[in-house]
Length: 317
Image 1 (tube, rainbow, N blue to C red):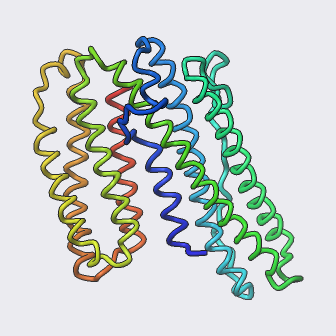
Image 2 (spheres, rainbow, N blue to C red):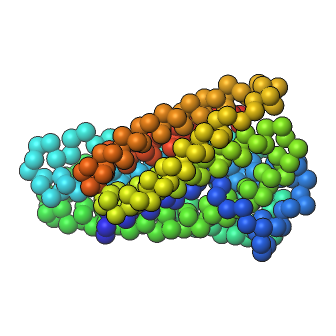
Image 3 (cartoon, helix red, strand yellow):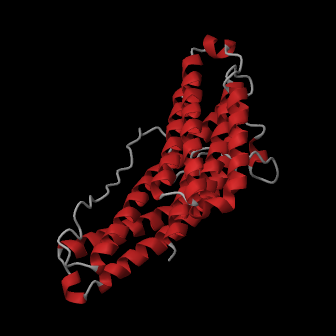
């Protein structure tokens, strides 16, 4: 299995779980929610936010599992190395506890359309089952290493378990992408209702638009970073668009934000955006000089995106 493709699959699915990207009004998706009250829309958003939160938690766990699997694979191919399995910390997954009255992932809220309730009921169940399978494979791999069974079968089972983890992860990410796409469509439609008369809507829409642009930019760099010169033209154009958006959105009139005591949070978002632009410019220059991006540079881009999301969430808290 192509490891680069696998990491990209995880990245794309999890990045998509952070910001709504589709404002479509067609079909029985978002259009089904156009006449909802603000209260109903808020309840729908509470449910979609829960699914996004779970997707991010699972994504963090899976990323650590895959990183460990890469290290373990290397050790299994040369178990005589006394440092073969040194420093491999087992990832733990604990879903954050929620109050009794709060929404639950496996119980879609009544404010959803019957079609979407059925969709989420099925997708949440199947993705939960797929995630549990990955956890089970990794537990088997841990037990295999603890018992040092690779000494008996020349690492055959261990390598097979690693392949199963990677295959299952690829399947789960494909399913998550479909789930999160639906989440984002519904969240966008519901958010438009909640924000209709909000004095903060211009700021929120500006930040969301920029989050989506940064999301797309990071995806471009992750997918094409192995041959940077092949994507350099697209990267330059996307970066220029980011700079233009920063110049426009960081200078919005702050009167409404000040009235709502949100001006400092908005400024922090665009201060961070500015720092990302500066850091990214160095990465682009390095990529053009060397013809490719390093794994560290790609991970740094993704981390910077995460920091920007934190600033967005602080504004909305």
